[in-house]
Image (cartoon, rainbow over the protein chains, first blue to last red):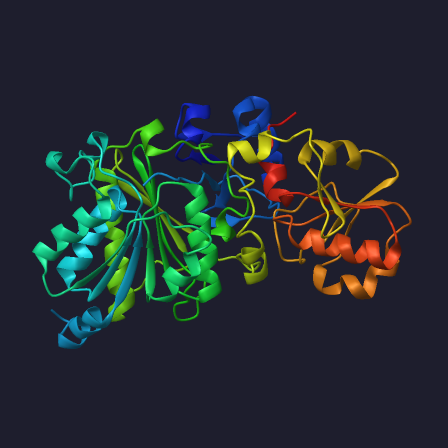
Length: 75
Length: 366
């Protein structure tokens, strides 16, 4: 499974991409990220699996590409 | 050019586009709208030109420092195309003037630099069913999408579908704080103008149902489908109007000031509580948390005891237990009405969470 981080989320992870062992679902992924990077506790973002935005807890598979997209406000 | 003839040019001449914000996104989109021959361009911005703007707001020169952005932008694009009408609004776009301003135009370009105005444009354009061309930048990345308009079988989306909870101002940093490479808003603003021209003339596929993320350093775009089965509504007109006279609860002062003050609205006779008090009350076994949002609204939460949509509340009001009740909703407006009704019908002690889940999710984690 590959994770992609955008915008200010890369300040937390220090990387734009990360490979990870498969996690059961998106809720577990969010919890794991908070444990690994406490900065995620406050972070606002939505999750997209294989370029499709999901808001409900969704199962993840080995070959999924999971994007974490925060809001930007600059202009 | 195939697909772009005199008819398309006439449509552009007849079109009225409102650009909210004459900063970096605004400067580039305004220039291309004028160049393309958009007949009427409205520009809203209360700012004066400052030196730090010049590297990315290319309508302005060093000799313009201290002058109004709207008047200089209007002057420059009139030099470029003297046939167009430019409406100048040298004041802040706010909840009081949003509907009237947007109502006079066919579509809106969001060229703002803060969440408060982005959500305001989103909600106002959704209420008036006018297209909103959303753009935002941070450092080396930009986002772009077209909201409040459908295309072929794609229904209209809005910004709240992506981010239902409005972030606190400064939470993700402005261009002034985070920095931005000047050319980036130039690119995104130009793309916003392109989307406007596509919508007006009816050529091509507008960015409906998709969020486009451009990464300047990688030279790459990443596109996300934002179409979901569940659609998140923008704010309703009654919620929008109810907030007109409210202090904005999302700004720093709104949430943090008055944490220990319980504000009682005497007119409504409903006790509005802040997030800190809600956190204390909800853990109490004799307090019942009622969510009055509609079933399709998100984010989903795990701390309510029951969800009864506002539309069904009156028929189900007897189902509520004889406890103290905390009513919550998205913005803290519907919950006041709901609390009032429950108090009236059931005579229970009822609280409403001020600022709703927006305030809740913007609270510092404890």
